[in-house]
Image (cartoon, rainbow, N blue to C red; front, side, top):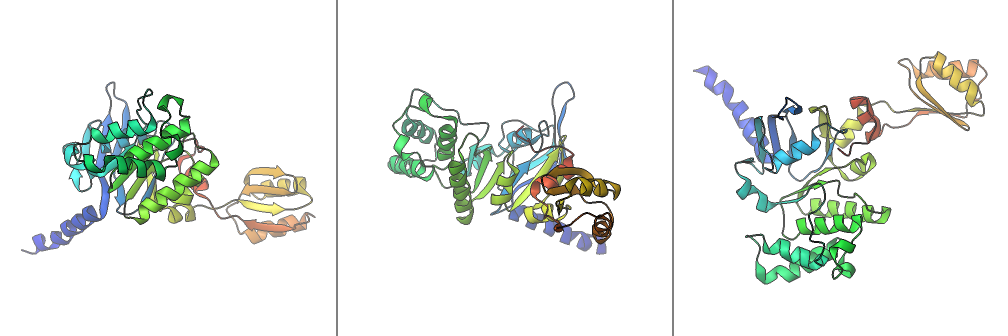
Length: 328
């Protein structure tokens, strides 16, 4: 008699997690023909209202995961729930509430930017034709394309095409926005505008799930993140927590950089880099006060000594052992 009641809180907890999560996968796996394992037992949780960054080096399974979430391909095993519904079974119910920009927008080059959006909207059975032109005008304005609305899409730059694809995703209010490299091809000003737009959408209650190879972009705009490597989830959680778990770089400012670099290596520091009057390194596993004392004892004139706060890039490299080119 006691066992059923003991299990009940677990079921209740899982139900509450599902309600609070816009995306939830359990043991999600995709194996392609030939045996290639693209995604391996993925347990991903995207909280409602978050701006969620999805990171992973080339071949990590990031794009395959997004395709499964959007119902474009079926998983080999495991489950994926989006907005509380199983995918791809509930595609027709879920996708009207999801805006997506995946691997660049599909555009008609011979049509203007405005006419592309009008056609996108006309293809949406849930869209109200009476408000179509007003909504298209608003979407163009939100991504800064009003002045180029009459220009043919084939004359658009890569950044302008990205903006137009984002405008298409914003034609209707969405509970979830899925963006694959949303700032690809944009200049710094355009990137700032898109970051601002993402924050605005999140403040309005839209959950934003985005992949990006720009780790500083993820750190600036995302509240949560997940890191993939070789098809497996390495870690996930609030961005601040991911960076906090990684040691930062040791920075020594001195007019004796060569001697400082030598002493740091003797003290067990790794990845020592000399740049003019500054030496940086991965801190050794010992009391840093002893390292500082060793520098002084060796006659190094120490003008500054400290550990820089770890960035998301530092955490990514520490977790995956790879650089930050994660566009794949």
